[in-house]
Image 1 (tube, rainbow, N blue to C red):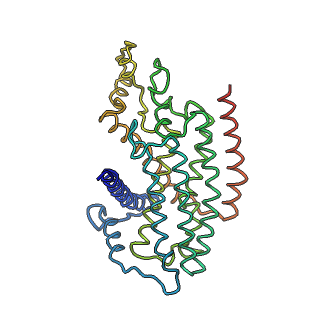
Image 2 (image 1 turned 60 degrees about the vertical axis):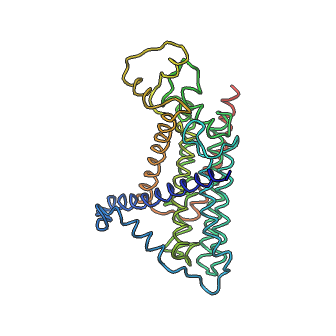
Length: 365
């Protein structure tokens, strides 16, 4: 019985992520249609809203085909490992002050480590398929993801050095009014990316490298349809194929949430807030509409209003970046493999190391 709350939380989380993935597919189709000057889904349901639900229903009803020559155990296990590794990363995401499923003092390390397990599932899928195209796609995926984990970690580390904590909830708290001197108003200028201008470059590295981590265009080389059919999941169909797609869109949301938490204030409101100053006895009173709006859209941490507003701001910022990821996919052409690796090792890694050293120097000074 003691595990029931965790099971219930996990089921709610799975349902929320699945719903997000379905709606994200629909939105991406509409964005692609707009960019390409066409209509997009418009038949199944009003404005084509039910098209994605019809597609997932079709996938669930399809036969689970397992070719004769595959390694059956690894073939079946691969999509499960890929999805679980991404899904587990959401367990430590703070949706408000102290409001996360699991509280860890090194939750940022947990997310980076658990998402890295996805590489193992991709290799299992490519190897067990007994297909040269799947194997080539798996090799590309592993080389790409292992390489780009380094600039992602360096970009996050450049902010962590300044914050002094690996706890995602603490990183959020230090970017709000209750994490800075009581005489400050907080708001957007308390966020890391504005407090430390060099983190703008760190976020740019993180944002571009996260596209490679998610296998999104222009870094979708593991799934280059014109070259290697569909990459490591060529032999998959039905529900198992749906798990790979669900993992991809879930990963898009996870990297967006992580970037928002570390760089863009997490669950903090962008508006200045004087409610905590007044509560602390400062006696600050202002008729400025911006400050009053900030007071209304922050909420007291740990309360229902604080958690609701925190979730709203966190998801709003993250979904905004997901939309940018979709826009990038349908705007920029795919790059070559050698360009992909050169960008990582010759540009992002050296610049990332420099940013970490700069953050350390700022911290010392």
